[in-house]
Length: 123
Length: 123
DNA sequence: TGACAAGTACGACGCGCTTCGTATGTAGTG
DNA sequence: CACTACATACGAAGCGCGTCGTACTTGTCA
Image (cartoon, rainbow over all chains, first blue to last red):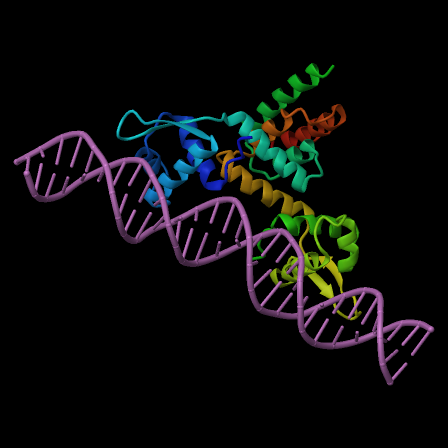
């Protein structure tokens, strides 16, 4: 129903996930002027149409809140990539991700803990 | 230099990675007629221009081979998503991927083995 | 040798996304 | 009350991608 966010929409959602509610101007500034103000505005209007955000119009400066959660959205983005490039195997994607060398020692330990939880659960 | 493959290009690359060299028709058939023949042809021509594949024109039916490898391409696709949606943390992406519930017991064990290797290496 | 089958080349269109210019409305202030 | 600052709304352009129709070339075989 609610579509997955596009790239530009995802940038905005990430800002909103950290600290909502926010006005368009606040989002615009958080984005570091990577796009024009009206570009951000328009995108957020479209997101409201799509149901990705809600907005409170009681003030002159409308306040925006995310209408989709981070975790499920991230999972769907991953599933998309998994289907597209990893033959449906999330584990294969995870392994590729870990072998990019971009993970620190601590992060690896975290992954290990998650893995233990999952393996337990599954039995 | 060589750009990342687009979605349609990735579908074709996956076929070529499995069994190259192949003609356009063979790729077309492997794709199960999800797109028209000339669509596949055109896309493969573009891929040749981009340097994603090479082609042997000595026969009337040109033979195509991948010019980029699967592993690095997959890693770049992941990095792209990591930067776009996971604040640069490949480990965070890996954890989300594992918690989609799409991984079997065996796959989890594989991930665990990889993890052990990585943790060793890093010390 | 002529006609058909099968290949390549190429141009063009439609769509979604991003971008921004411009029009319009409105709250505050001297 | 007029002026300025700042907000929203909206239309339209540019671009990449996927798609396919059509033209052209070439090999084959009756």
